[in-house]
Structure formats: structure tokens, C-alpha cells
Length: 343
Ligand code: DAH
Image (cartoon, rainbow, N blue to C red; front, side):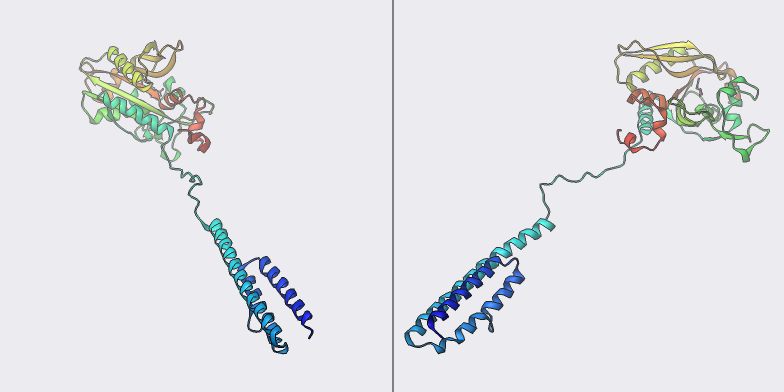
């Protein structure tokens, strides 16, 4: 072979091999390139095999050239290997690694329902005023819900409280005729039957009315009943308790209380209670109340002349609506997280 041709062949080989190495896209393909050019049966060795056919000085010259070419290619492959290795580690880290600078995902915790929060707030304040917290049954007899509270069958006040009756538990006997309680007042006689005065209790709880719903009416809602019985209790005590309660509940220095006449069969006199908060000029209706009726005492077997006391009933939902500025009672029962998550 003419020597010029051989040198030419080496140059072509060199160019091709270097290009292939430089362009190797990943480690496996770099390995394949190494085998192809520098492997035992690779192209470089094919060139070496031709050396014996070259004579004398020239052979030494070509030999050196091939040696240095081999080491060049090995260096080049080594460099490329490290470069590809770094890239692949980088890529892996990017796909699997933890980037501690990314903001964490929020974990959402459950929390109390706004009505529960308000109920607990009410309970805490009354506890601080010496009241005990008492709970009563939601399935109640006609007797405790109505008759014992001076609301017999034909009483017009029954119409104000459209009632869910339990159809499998109807009876002529009011004590065996069952309903869903329409008012927490059901606990008045129940509690007095079992406890002697003096007493101070509140009864928070759920009540039911069979009526059309709108922004201020629900078929179920919550009330807080209050009862304070002692020797010398009057409306003045009631006013003082309300003043203290509403000041604390609404976090206001000044609360004005207004009593208007109202009718509830289980109190005499009966009143409606309005409050005015701080510097507002608006009266808000917040409770029904009055002095416990002698007939209620009689139902509880208290001697009427001996004891006096006041009773009151507040709508817990209404308190919560005023407290949080909510305009539709139905939201409390909607189970809508967009609403509930705001509390
Ligand atoms: N139970 C009454 C209602 O549901 C509210 C009420 C009024 C309760 C006057 C009382 C009271 O204890 O004295 O409308």
C-alpha cells in the first residue's frame, strides 16, 4: 500500500472516531463507540495489523503516530465519559430528588363547626356566671315539650311550633306521645323534677320545627335555654345576667338591653329581649324570656310561692349569624366546605 494512502486512512479514521466520540448521546452508546474503534477487533487494531507491511523508519514514524492517536482517543473517551456521567446524575436528581426550596403542600386539618364554636363560647360565659351545662333528649314526649309548660293540646301556642311527630309512637297520653322537641324548654320541668332549687342551668341543643325553610328558618336549629331559680330572683337578675353575657359574647364594653312584652305560656310576665351593641343604633332581637310560671312550678312539684326564677331561650344559630356576620341560616347545615373552611 502506498504510504500516502495509509496516512490518509489514519486521518479519516481519526476524524471519524473523534466525531463519533464527541457526539455520543449517552453512556451506553459511548461504550459501543469505544468497542467499535478501540476494541480488540476494532478499527484501530485493523490499522495496527497493517504496520508490518510498512518498512523501516516509516513504520516507526507511523507506529508513534498510531500510539499517540490511541492515547488521544482514550483521553477523549474518558472526558466524554465523565461529562455524560455528570449529565445523567444531574438528570436523575432532577427527576427524583427533593427540592427543599419548593413550598410544602398544606395539610388540611379538621376543625369545629362554627355552631359548635359558638355553643362552646356561650357555655364558657355562662359557666363563668355560675351556671351548669345540661343536655336533654331530642326525642321528647308531648308532655315535657308542651303540656308541662302550660301548653295543653288546644293551646294556640302549639300552632307557633309546627311539630314533627313520631308516627310509630303516637298516644292519647301526652307522656307516651313522642315528637322531635320544638324547644329546649323541654328540659325545664325534666330538670326541676330531679333537682331542687336553688339552681342555675343552661341547656344548649338541637330543636326541630316542621316548617318551610328560608334564609332565617331551618327545620332544625339550635337553642340555648336558661333557668335560674332561687328565693329572691326578679327580672333585675335576668337583666344583669343578659348584660354580662352579651358584653362578653360580643366582646363589647357597652351593651344596652331592652325588654318588650311578649307571650310565652310558661312565663309570666313574658318578654322579648333586644340588645344594642356598642355605638350601633340598631336593636337586635335575641331572646324570649320571663319569670317562670306557677303552673310550671306545679308540674315540677315545687311550691310556687316559695321559689321564683327566670327562664330564657335564645337561638344559637341567630347568635352565630350575628357573631360571624352570616346572612343565611341554611349555610350551617349545607355541609359546604367553601363556607365551613372560613371558620
Ligand atoms: N322556647 C321558646 C321558643 O322556642 C323560647 C323561650 C321563650 C324560652 C321564653 C324561654 C322563655 O325559656 O322564657 O320560642
